[in-house]
Each structure stands twice: as C-alpha cells, then as structure tokens.
Image (cartoon, rainbow, N blue to C red):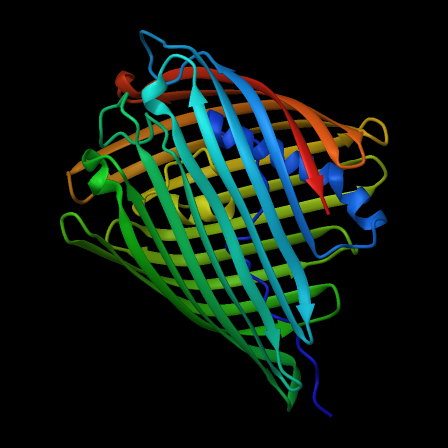
Length: 408
C-alpha cells in the first residue's frame, strides 16, 4: 500500500514574523503581524473563513530618519495599508495568497513619500501516491534603509528596494523504504534598487538542491542534501557561486512547539567553513510563546530566514540572533518584547576591502483587540550600529501606534 507523504518542509528559510527591525516601514509591518495574531481567535470563532480583507492606518515618529551618526533628522510619518488574502484547499491542493498595499507619507521629508506592497502566494500540492511538492512566489517593495552597507556612503535620497523570490520543490516517497524520501528544490532570488548608486548591491541568484529525508519518528526528521548556488551582479557582470552540503533536522516536541536546524559545510569564492541556522518556536501553552532564530551565514540567507537587521548581500558572513516573546496579558491584550544582535564580517572581492560591524536592536509592543475585528497597538523599537568606520555608526529609535480593521 502506498504511503502518504506531506509536502516538503523548508529548513533553511521559514517565513516568520519579526519585530527586531530597523526602519519605520518594517516597524509598521511588524505591528500588523502582531495584530493578525490577535485577530486569529475571532477568525476561528467565525467558522474559519478562507479569506480576509482589511485596512490599517498608523502614525509614527523616528528620531533619526537617515540613520546617521551626526546631524540627526527627526520626522513623523503616516502609513495607510490595504490588506487581503485567501487560504483554501482545492481537493488535495492548498492554495494561498496574501497582499498588502502601502502608502506612506512623511510630514517634513516629503520627497520620501512612497507606495509599497508585499505579495506572497503559493500552492502545496500532492498526488494520490508518493509525489508531493510546493510552488511559491513572493515580491516586496519598501523604502530601503539609508545606511545599510559599508560599500556605499549613507544617502538621504529616496531609494526603493524590490525583493522577489520563487521556490519550487518536489518530494518523492520511496515505496520500499517507507521512512525515506527524495527531495529536489529550486530557489530564485533577486533584488533591485531605484537609486543607481546601489547597482553594485543588486543580485540575481539561483540555487538547486537534491537530497534524502529520513522520518525517524512522528517527532523527528533528518535530511542530507547537496546544494549549489550561482549568482550575478547585473550592473557589472560580477559572478559568484557557492557549494553546500546540508545536514538538517526537525523536531516537533508537541503540536505547537518545533525546532528546525541546519548545519552546512560551505565553500565559495569569498569564504569557506561551517554555516547554519536554527529556528525554535516554543509554545508551552498558557499565556506566552517564544520564537528564536539564530544564523551564521551570508546576508542573503539570513535575510530570507527572517532576521531583518543584517546586511543582505551575498559575501558577508554574519552571526545573528533574534528572539521574540509574546505574553497574553488578558484575553484581548498582548505584550511583546523582542531583541537581537548581529555581528558581520566582510570580504569584498569587487572592491578589495574587509571590515566588521555590529548592531543591536530592542523592541517593546502592545496590541489590544478592541472589537471582534478591530485591533489597536503601539510599538517602540531601538537599533544601534557600531562599525570600523565611524561614518556608518548610528543610534535610532522609532515609535508608533496604529488601528487595524479586518473582515473575515
């Protein structure tokens, strides 16, 4: 009899909400993530509607808009968002899509006014037999950080950052070895900036992997795979590649707590050694939950893991830790505390330079489900950066409140 296999689980880049962020735009996104979490019980009580639509408006203050060490410029900004999504099953297949449209207006620095979006869509598919897989696509446009790389001097000009990623995976169960399955994966990632001076930070990258998974028990799963990555900087034709041997493990201690880990032997033109990632989602029950992410890898891999305070380039090896604690104060009020640090080292083949820089971030938030489909919240976020070049040092904080309404 054929054994049923679930769609593949990605160990390297789970999509998780993050509050340890560096810009007002990302802060607003984290507030919406907390609001969505509070609204979940209302959705469940309403019968599990497969769709939702909503809107959000927020007002924020930042003391250092351009992330500089001198001549700090403060400002206030207002952001309006429209949200919508669907998550449903069509037979054996799960189909989902989420879209957020943003309009952000600055009070004084009006040249920074911008429109952005965040799209995520995909399909989890499976056949009657041993074949299953996933297809997903994400695309996001935001206002880029003004001081995000030591390769370019900090800027005060509006710079829109566009990221997109496409992933396809296929898993084949082995009928004679019911605990084993083969998995193949392809990932395409790219980044673009609107300012020409950031052309050297753009990339196009493709990765392919092939490996075997072993289901040791209902709680444990292990994997071994080979991965090859090849990328290019379109502006100057610079090419890079990377080879990895990945050892992965997944542990589901309970129905709501899980641990995903990856340890890799990595080799590229700019570095060689051990890389890895760890995502721990601990929900012991009761009023609180804890999510922790750890990574030692290049900036691109760390960025797609969900750690947002690092520099997401292809040859910057960084060690990053990010954690978030949620505590349900009452049935309608949730408190959130977040923090993290990032240590970065750079070996730049294009410019022949090397450097290190460190950053720390802290956040505190509260959200109140005022009505069944209405949530109000506030958040405070502080980030600091210390580098070998004082030009890139800064300290900044952002604070804001919002109201969001959802129809499900």
